[in-house]
Each structure stands twice: as C-alpha cells, then as structure tokens.
Image (cartoon, rainbow, N blue to C red; front, top):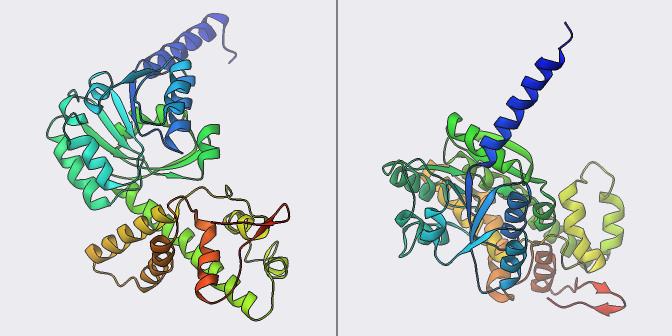
Length: 329
C-alpha cells in the first residue's frame, strides 16, 4: 500500500530524531597520530561534538580546531567532557597510561560512558582494563583498524569491533563516520585478538616477499622480472601491490605502517599464542624477520622497507631508485 504524505512525514521526523540522538553523544579523542587525525576529522565533520587531547605536533590540533572541535589539556578533561572516548595510540603500554596514569581518563569518566580503544593492543591488557572500567560503570570496546592513513582521512577504514551487542549498537554510528567496513567480531577482547591474527597474515606475507625478493636478486632475477610473474597471477593481492611500490618505485609512503609497530604487534601475537598454549613457529619466524630491521634501522621506516633490510643482511642491494637517484632508508 502506498505511503501517504503524513506517513512519510512521520518517518522523516523519526529519522531526524534518531540522527539527532546519535550525534548528541559527546565524543572524546586521544591520539592524533597518522591514523587518529583522520578518524577525529571524520567524527567532527559528520556532526559530532568532539573534544580532543592536543600534542606537540600542533598541525592536527589546529586542523581540528578549525573544524569546530574543542581542545583539552589532559585525558581527564577529555573524559569529563565526553560520553564516548576514542583512543588511537601505539599499543597497550600507552593505552594503560592514558587510562590509569595521573590526569588519566579514569579520573574524569562518568558512569555510563564508553571507552573505545582503536589501537592494536595486547588482548590480555584489554580484558583487564575492561574489568577495571566495568567496575566503575564504564563500558570498554576494542575497535582496532585496518588499512592506512589515506583511508583514515577518507573515512573508509576497516574496523573489527569487540563489544557486547548493546554497546556495539551504541558506538557503531560513531565508527560509521570513519569506517567503510565494520565487523562486530565478538565480545570485548575479540577485536584485538582478530587484529593480531590479521597482522600475522599480512606481516607474514611481508616477510615472505622480502626473503623471496632477496633470493631472486641473488640468483639473478631482478625485482621487475620477479614482479612480472607474480602480478596478475594467483599469488597477487592488494597487499602485495602496496608492498612492492617501495622496491619497484621507491615510494616511501606506499604503506605507512612502521617496522617498529609491526615488531610490537608480533610480540603481542607471541604472547597471545603462549597464553592459548599453541605453538606459533611461523609467527616467531616472522617476528624475527622484523627484529633485525627494528634494531638496526631508523624509527620512521615502514613495512615494505623490510625487503631492503633482508637483502642487505644477505649481501644483496635492493635499495630502489626514484627519479634517477638511489633512495635511502
């Protein structure tokens, strides 16, 4: 039966009311790094009131202030001004300090608030923090990310979310502002568990690609020749194409995920496997591939540069060319 104008008006008003209710949640944000800045930008651009913690790098803060967000001087102040607080930092050590430390979130969180950790964290820490905050009447959600700062800025990240159903329903409209694909993977802790498994697969690929490229060069098969077989074949994938842009083109920004963070995530994976009582030899081998590059290289080196390190250890030069010049790490 066709809807009358009055019925359509009621539906429209109800939809407007639902949107108003959703955006009436006051959002807090801690962690304006490569990923966090884009996420926070999308939250405020989609109509939410946002209070963020500034940092020494003033560019993200000035950008958010220009979009109508508000700056706080401590994590406690962010919590006091917010209903839902997002954290996007390196890992569990930083998250624990933000929540538990002096001037931390715990000092300002109100009963009924939600904290959402978008970092790649240790699930053991995540579960402990959830219990600690639940005792205060605060829900804890893990919503780690996949993809790169480019997708963070565009609002098309992937998110794997661990939360009880009702809490997931509450935070999903906010996550929708910055994620193009959201998977409710399970209860609190499952998001971080799945993220470590996801990174194990991707970083395992990176280790295999790096060793294969070094061996290929050693036996006289150049990276372009290697690529001519793998690309568009059954072994091709989006991660391979991104990874190869450093070796083939010298593109430093092809995948802006640091080797230091990769190594950290693989140590978390090792801890998770140990707690589960499962042997993880390939995870350990992957971790060891990144360990040498992490120990010897500069801080701002990214995952595709692992190929250069693995080659160097084996007496092979895979440093790429760009604009006729040899690149450096």
